[in-house]
Length: 213
Ligand code: URA
Image (cartoon, rainbow, N blue to C red; front, side, top):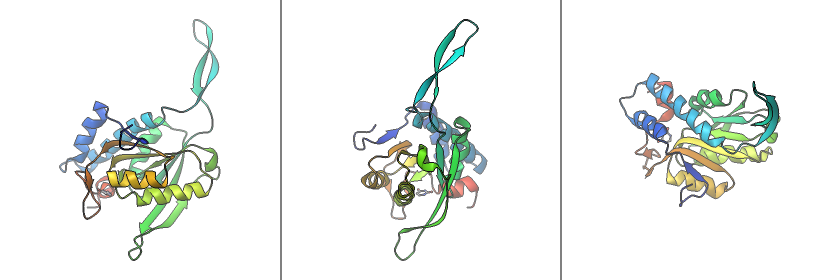
């Protein structure tokens, strides 16, 4: 947890930081970028699931019978904020292969600048599940705030947010609106620039994942 934001966890593991450096480089190819997003997402999934509840299961080893822990409760639901969030799904599902998946699509109204929902599809019983919302870039935080508000409206109570990079402005916005949400990121960057990009950042995550620019 960082002192400025008690609900923010920055995963400073050397493997994560090494991969993040290559992810940021502008020379990194589309294929390389995609692979690195997947690998980092997988490691962030490991961190964000650290406090999952477990229960004992009676097993027999070749030596003896004993009670050993297994994860208890319903499977988690990963909610991707379209479209860049989809780049993190494969990595998250590598560690949580039975997780359910939801999608939220938002665009910014050019007049009001408010996020407007154009797509929302989640499991019917999502309120009974721990939800991990994924979006590579926590920039202004407006999309994350809107997506989490929407999830709470349908009864979700346990929410984690996972991103690759976060700007202080986005973390503040998210935690001001949703102080109960734990945020996990690979790095807390310096600031947003005038165009809403994270500095030093990595550019447009969606374009780099999907090769659209
Ligand atoms: N979204 C991105 O893809 N990159 C940024 O730097 C900010 C928002």
